[in-house]
Length: 113
Image 1 (cartoon, one colour):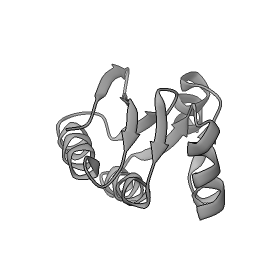
Image 2 (cartoon, one colour):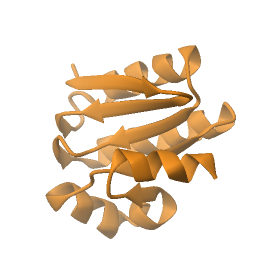
Image 3 (cartoon, rainbow, N blue to C red):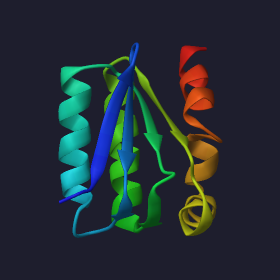
Image 4 (cartoon, rainbow, N blue to C red):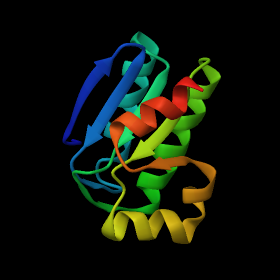
């Protein structure tokens, strides 16, 4: 089971996973994120400031979450990416594909434009 909190600011859903996203909990993250996108805001920010590790399974669910949000007429932005997690995003090329921002406010602003 994924450790994750969420918040809604206006028309933006903010997901904040904690500790790890790996093969043992990636499906849980995907299911929870999809349910929240289907039920609410289609603009999504994933705040990685509380995440210490992400595996390739985690990258896959971030990508599927981005596709789901975009298909629903919204979008996805990332923030708080640091340390090992940032390195994984950089090496995989995801950093250039997905919008990465310093904080939640910057990520929200990027979805408004």
